[in-house]
Length: 462
Image: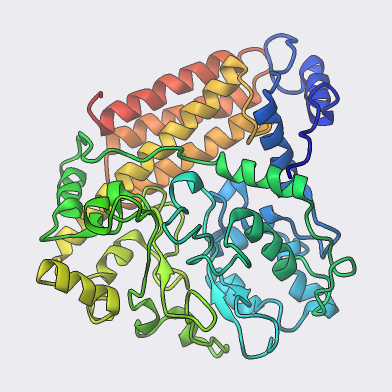
């Protein structure tokens, strides 16, 4: 049974926002009352606070330690390099009780890999896997399957029923512990039902809430050709497992209730994987189940270009490399590759230009999602609409981060220079809004206009 939701009038976060607003510290043009949340938004806001601030009486980590909003709710080596040495992510480097068998600092810092004991804690020295951190965007449309929820990498990151609630509990036990004993009430406290409800609501509110409807009327020649290849069942064949570039199987192939699917794509058979080139112990990852069946679930591709490295073990750095993987022997000889051969009569064999074109399509739809989120954040600030999953005084900064992501995603692929120029103008306006105490709302609306112009450069009006 769910606990009673927190009452709104006494919400301490809202009172703090009111004080800041009336002292002018938030850059608002006038002293207006803060936006008031609905009951659902209040639950989401409670989950947000827990996600980023609650340590559950553990080693200092929070959910946000591995899923920071500023980095698309994931971590990678570049982001990790910006953290101070005393950050709780590095507990294995400064806590004597956790210096062995909790993390591998070398693989964490160099490759963004985290220790996971999804098969239990019986043999910490030898029975573990090194995995990347999946983002938590678009979960309502990416984790459901006919066999139950698929959270983490194929669902085995969550004990019990594999749900988001179980995933949160498993994360506390795995990553928040003070010692290797992992004793509830001693090394950490387990989340309450009310806290699990709130964190689930928060995570489900992040990112896209609906699927794309492909094909899109893209303006870029290269991205448009990539979209054609992506959906061609005789060429790219990508849409079979990534319907509408999401995380779910094509219902025409796998059935209407297929949802998110697990496959053994042969990633573990790739030669020269970065982690294997080190002197560190990296046991083979057997995937879903105990013992594992070698399968991992299908991630969404809309958010892929700015959430690399790719695959469960961060084995490929770029989106172009991830697309090219499906041309290689590791995939085409895998169970999933052979399944595709049986269904279509051949494997995947794209030339270099076609690989780049598919990647350009993925970059374009990622940038469009960055723009959508940026506009939503700026509109919330300018219109004073309450977003439960964002603190009001962080809306402008978060809009700036989404805009930066859009710039990086497009420039890294050499795409849409005019759109990039518009994004840079929007970014400057957002920065001015962050620094202004009298015109921040006006500047935010101007930034929305620039983002809308950018969107018009990428896609025909629908």
